Image (cartoon, rainbow, N blue to C red):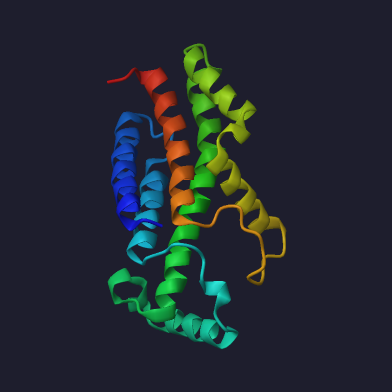
Length: 195
């Protein structure tokens, strides 16, 4: 993973998140979650997350990290975290961001649909975008992979390092978030106009 490229992508996503948050006059996208998702991706980046390396650690090392994290709250600040605790927290922030991305994708588009389309003041362009999203979910490769990853974590045994993870890299997680922001931005632009 090229850190310079990821750094540029993070800056671009911060800017796009800001645009969506500012455009969303009725908080239909859940601005708090959008910002929290972006903050989690930034924290994962600052903790040098690339892929989930924590499951590969020996069980004794994992237990040691759990004890440290649970007994020393200062470890929750990225600049104070060292060694394996850093690996654990980087994965935590990455997973938090991916789960938030999927929760937003699954719930916010439904809310946008109700807000903009269901009533007589509904916007046909917004409806088309939302319908397209729902009908063509697989056309969004990173959101689709993030959805499969979340469903694996919710419904299947995921212990061990041999589990196939459809979405694991920071770059892929950022791409899923970009796909979500793109849809939200287009729906809001179709409703409010491109200001």
